Length: 244
Image (tube, rainbow, N blue to C red; front, top):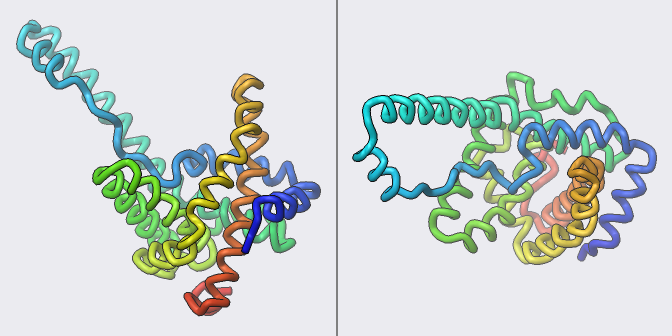
């Protein structure tokens, strides 16, 4: 059984010798969108349909044209953001997770960032990460609480793909669910334990949050290594399946 103290102690030990490399990788993961919610949030929120109907009904032609242009631009921006997250953000995130996994095993190499852009890995990663985002989105449509629970169940998917991008999109989600079974609440508490650091970062003009991210990412990599070993010991997967 793992403890927060052990994970953080090991993470700090690694960062002592490679903090600035970890900082750059964490910055890339953040830009890629991998340090927000556990999966890409497609739910852009609801709008006041009644007010919109009133405006459309009572507005002149010029107002309608302006609204159409604004909505078109907003839609285009949303599509561009989604395309960036899917086709560039996903591979960058997997490469970043690969870096942290390997750095915890004394292999600090920035070249891991480009790991996912290999043509034999790229599309399998896109497919698996997209499937994870879609499934999480559907759970959130059901209810908020099930969505949060399943986001923790799918938490290890990027790390599993960092080990073996070709494992298969359904298998990646299933294995992550098995790895996190009985650990989801503890992982939630682990996330809460970083709130103090994040608040300090926010007080430092928000920029300070970026300097906390290597610590969080290194700790999560340690968590994955523990859960991976548990899965191997319990026969939930094999070293061959994870390409170890």
